[in-house]
Image (cartoon, rainbow over all chains, first blue to last red; front, side, top):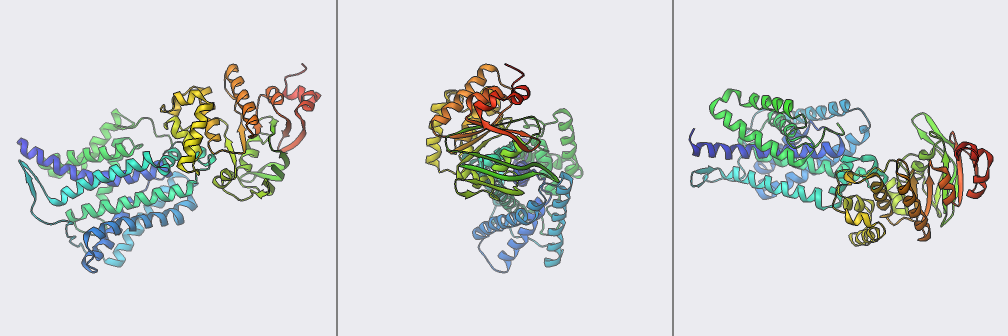
Length: 292
Length: 235
């Protein structure tokens, strides 16, 4: 493998990893603040992508507007899930909350199959045109959009968590929910906000990756597994860790896939297991998970 | 100012408070004493809406607090400093403080922050340090200051001297005296009955969820039963 191939494989891997990072960041945000492991993250995105598909093909909505509508739809779905599902069962055990989000994931899949059938559909790329070549590097325009979007989202999330009072409140809840309530922080509205942001991220991630696959009810399944690997690798307690974990997984699997395509998906899980044996708290986890 | 009238509350199937009636007038420090499990913390939690009033009423000024959320009650002017301090360990001192004034505007938060830094110099020095790196005494000061950030008229303090060195306990009690002078009323739950009675105007003694004794701090300090049970025998 010469260095130019290596460079291109790495960049291509970074774009895949960016999508894992987007899904993973949403999962960690919800997990840390509301203490719920959201197994429906991927399929929330899948469902929103169907909505986007019909906006584009049937309603001929321009892409830039679709991007905004997808984020809005994600936020609304997140709000509804928190308000009408998670809130009423918040005090239940972890296991039942996990079962609930797994169930939700199946609901989204079933709903998609029922409304739109399971026929795979080709999703047009967000941007068309020839790949961009800079020296030895060749990147598709879609990949560039994915990388830029992930950078922007990471920046926005950082500003939210560290520069707004709602974000600071979300971090405080993840450390000591009781103290947050004692101080008069309206925890239910913070939970709703976090679910809205997390689900919007799910929609965005799915929309960005779907042109590489085909749109069908199960297309986010494997991506969600990778996103979970990413957050475990990153230490489960930081959005930053999830982002870096996602990028690492994307790059490594793309390099492995070049030589050994058959083990592309399983290889990374083995790496994660090994990392966990050596570093139980992941690469960036400061401590053992306090709340999980 | 605060009136708790015939209140019943508790957890799950169990009533911890059984028809508790207490009151607190503007500018007073009122101590609530009692053994572990007597319902002191439950009383504070009920007042600030963390647990539901099952029977009876809690009023603040002329406003009924029953059924309000903790966030709404903080806005009415009651702050609660919980037992065990509950500092956010990974947030900076300043972030901890600002969260105490969640419902205030940014400029109000700035003013309160400046006031707290003036009052607690050590917190100003440590403003960018993570809360979890502070010593026990500093954390207690931070918890107090964080409660005061919302500019409360009444502050509920749950065991503020617990686990602190004697010298620091003195500082905590001095701070409470200062607060009273600045017009903040205090409802104080304490293990340290002797010091509490020295500071407080009045006191209640809770026994298994009921008010067993009440009176001025001076009367209670002189009371034979109180001396035996809470003040470490005859003095």
